Amino acid sequence: MEDAFIVQGGKALKGEVSLSGAKNVALKVAIAALLFDTPVTFKNIPHIKDVTELLSLLESLGVKSTFNNNELMIDPTGLTNDKVDLLHGSKTRVSFMLFAPLLHRFGTALIPNPGGCRIGARPIDRHIKMLESFGVTVVYDSSTGYYHAKTNGNKLMGTNFRFEKPTHTGTELAILMATLCPGISRIENVAQEPEIDDLINFLNSSGGQIKRVGHAIEINGVDRLKYSGAPYQIMNDRSEAPTLAVFALATKGDIFIKGATEKDLHFFIEAVRNIGGGVEIGETGIRFYYDKPLVATDITTRPHPGFMTDWQAPWAVLMTQAKGESTIHETVFEDRFGYVAELKKLGARIEYFTPEQSNIDYQFSMDDTINNKAHHQAIRISGPTLLHNGVLEVKDLRAGATVLIAALVAQGESVVNGVSIIDRGYETIDKKLGLLGAELKRV
Ligand code: EPZ
Image 1 (spheres, protein in one colour):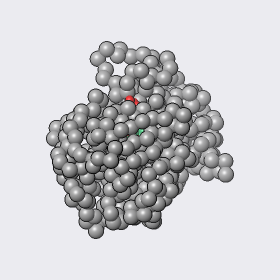
Image 2 (cartoon, helix red, strand yellow):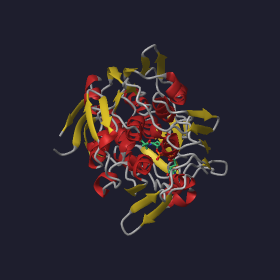
Image 3 (cartoon, helix red, strand yellow):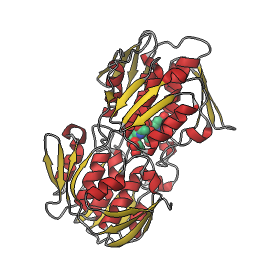
Image 4 (cartoon, protein in one colour):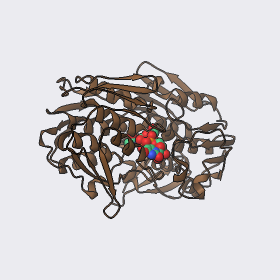
C-alpha cells in the first residue's frame, strides 16, 4: 500500500452522510474508564486510528478492550503497569492524560513527552502545574524524554487551582484527577469546549459530582465511580461536520449531514451564511449547499464558543473559491498553516502576514512561536482561483482533510500522500466521500 489516494477532481459532491462520534471525546472517556473498578461500555465511538492506537497503548498497560460496530468496552481491572512505553506514547497526544488513572491506581506514572499532530510546540506546562497543585511531584528527564510523576506516598487530595490560560485537555485532566480526590476541588479559568461537557456527563452518569460554575469547574470527590450499566453514547464530531460541509460547498455540491447540530456549529453556520453558502437546519441534521458564487470574509479562530481552530484549515480551501480577499487569523495554535504550501502547489494564491496583534489574546505562550513563520499568525487568500491537479502531502490531521478537499476541487487527477494521518481522525473518509459521488481510490 502507498498510503495515498488517487483523486479525480472537479465533481460536485451530493448526497447524505452521517457524522461519526467525536474523536476528542472518545479518547478521553476511554482513559476515564481506567478510574473505574469494573468494565465500562461506550457507543458511537468512531473506528479511527487515534482510537485503535490508544487501545493498543492501554493493552500495553494490561487493560483489555473490545471494539465492534462503534461500541467500545474497556475493562480496567487488568491495569498493572504504570509506565507508558515510548512507541505507544509518541503516537497519541492524549497519552499524558493517563497521569490521572495511573497516579490514582499506583501513586506513580511514567509517561513520555506527548505526540499527536505537528501544529506547534503543544507543551504541557499548564497540565504539570495543575498536577503539582494536587500534591504530585513531576520531574522531566530530558535524557529519556519521560515525565516521572508521583504522589509521594500521600493520598491525593482535592485542590483549588487556576489555569493561567485555558487548555482543553488540561481541563479534562484536572477533572479526571479531582473526580476521585476527597473534598471539593475548584478549577478556575477552564476551557469551555462541549467535548468537556460530554466527559463530565459520562462521569456524572456513574456517580461523579462535577459541575461548571461560570469559568470554573467544581468537583466533589467520590470514593469510587459506579458504572450505570447502560452504555454511554458520546456526542458527534464537531470538527468533522464543518469538514464535510466544506467538501460540499467547495465543489459546488449539496449534502445533508445527519447528526449535525446547530448548537455545536453556531459560528461555522454564521460564517457559511456570511459568504453566501446555503444552510438548512433540519430535525435530524443540517443541509449545506452551494447556492450562489461565494464571497470572501475574514475569520479569527477562538476557543469555544468561537470559530474553532479545527475548522480553519478546511475553511481555507473554501476561501480559494470565494470572490475577493479573505483572511484567517489563527489564535489557538502557533503553527497551524501546514497546508498552505500544499494548496499553493495547486495554484492557490495565499500569503502570510502579521496581523495587528495588540489586542489579541493568543492561547499559546508567545515563547512557543517556533520560528518567524509562526509570527505570521494569519494568511490572506485571494480568489476565486481555478485549482489545477498536483501531488499533495498530508502534514497533520485537519490539514490532511484540507488537501483532500483541494484535490476534489481541482480539475484533473491528483495524488494525496500520507492518508493514514487522515485516518487518525476521520472514520472511513473514502467511503463517506464515495457516497457523495467523489472519485477517489486508496492505493
Ligand atoms: C484539544 O487540543 C484538541 N485535541 C484539539 O483538537 C483542539 O483543536 C484543541 O483542544 C482546541 O479545542 C484533543 O482533544 C485531543 P489546548 P489541546 O491545550 O488540549 C497551548 C484535532 O485536530 N498550551 O487547549 O492540546 C497549546 O500549545 C486536535 O482534533 C500550552 O502552551 O489544546 C495551544 O497552542 C488539534 N501549554 C493552546 O495552548 C499547555 O500546558 C491551546 O491548547 C497546554 C496548552
